[in-house]
Length: 428
Image 1 (spheres, one colour):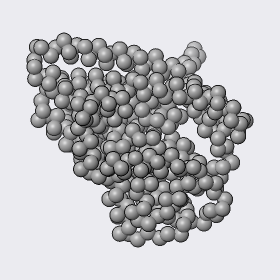
Image 2 (cartoon, one colour):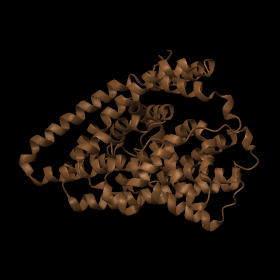
Image 3 (cartoon, rainbow, N blue to C red):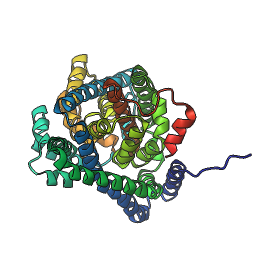
Image 4 (cartoon, rainbow, N blue to C red):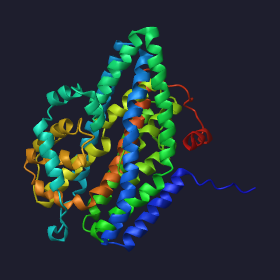
């Protein structure tokens, strides 16, 4: 008996991705593609952004109120931040080692590289720097002066801070807090239904976003920067398989199980270059996978600001690439300085558009690398962003499992889960 083919969401997104590439390549240079397709992509991204804040607030409040223990929560927060710092530092070192070993910028003819426009990133960098982005500034900005404004701007750290305090308040007032808790439980359930509904639109959003990108820079423009692209993708793959795979093994799980579980979300994140698009579904699936609600609700949103493994790896690699195309040989001490600066600048600005470019612009000058060099990779940044987004998502999903194991609370699904049950869970 032949097995009936199931046209899953992943299959639909893949079809949208392929069709988008074909349309973009056929109509390369035609502004009509952006005119007609960009609104579709923008609508999809806006729908996702619309649901992210309500989901984070409701699930985090439920999780914290369920824990109800400030000491226990503080212990989880401390462990989580230490884990994030260690893993992102490893990511920076892997990026530097890759660039030093393979030297992607050496031997490139700079006249063959087409420059992109980085004015928008420079403006954003100036805004970030004017607001302050040292360690103390990050700590101060975690506490919102106006939580409604933070919600409107999608500023995750103040939202998390408020939600944690509010959840502790609900737990502290006992019986009086039960109606409030029931309200947020209803909000969370309703928002996950809305998420599933919006995901039906994902293939159209992917088709539009990819079509616009390919029609803008074409496939030929990738050739001069092909070495960098191949190295970035290979290094990201190495990081997932070796580094995250090693961490997963130490935690008693498998990174490939997590990838299998999140195949739809990873394809969507890759296609849209946005980890926000999959945040609700990642939280939902990690909870089903066996991670407690309060850990998922805390670790995943916090990771979106502090655990951007793919982004930090890329920033280190791209910084050395730009130095190499200018013939600048960075000493060991300068590269250590670069690591230390990236450890600070890569934290807390996940909501800033073009975050990796912003971080690089804020960092390159500290080691004497010309900022203008970023213009050479601006044209392919979207394709590089696709790879680092996938690593960010896998890294945060794994972090929830590691924290659940560390706390001794991982459990709903036995670790010896077989292939068929993982597949069944991934399809739900």
